Image (tube, rainbow, N blue to C red; front, side, top):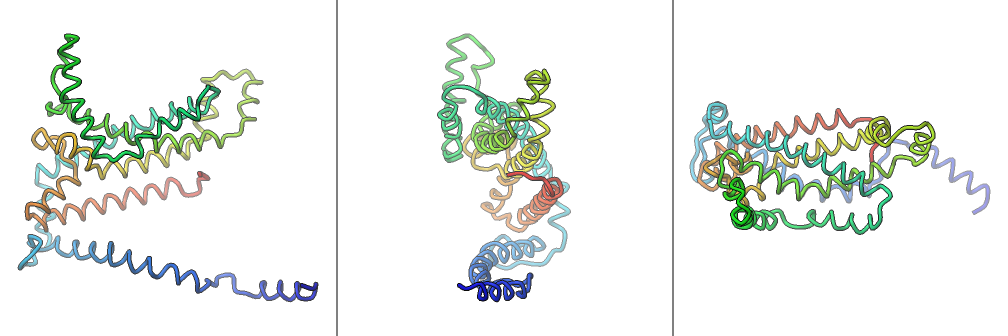
Length: 302
């Protein structure tokens, strides 16, 4: 290409409207948009419509307005499921992020075999939640009580899963065990993004490890902390498979999550009522997503 052709080509590029979108983008976007609309948006809108009816999922139905929504706020079982889900989510978020952050600090420090250890620690992330739940169900129901009887520790001789006041602890333990690896990887990425010169300068100034952690590490990875907390909380609100495998929502309804209440209602013909519950849950998820966007806007993470 001659110099003249280069100048002409550059002039044409400069005259091209900056806001113009290439047609090829629409070619790839349109099929995905159609599939998303048919598989997600349309069923969602239909479900919201039926939440204002007395439908059982099939057959005839009548429009009843906000009756289902009014009943939700006076239903002890629904309120209990929301209380359990939010309490469990907050507790698990704290456990997961504290442990994952400490592990990330250890796995990015100057220790031997840290690459191999990182591989070992992320294994739970690739195992199905229901499989993990069934394995831990056996441990809590058989192995742990057997250890309690062998050692004479009375508090270990009964299963946590059978205790209405402590069953949620077992769910937090299992959920955290599976969720820590994903959170750990994000924290490792954040810690590795901190320039080493910062710590070298801190060493020269006489700052100890504790001061470096509080004054350098935590402030510089604060964006990653926010991301992990919000994403973890949203994921734990949808808890289902681990709870099904561990307690099935029991004892009684002590560990029944919002997702379990909705699916149980669908299976028992309480379609419109639980669809109203799902709509409220969707609104809550949207609010949390908007909170995430407001907290992460302008942060340079990843």
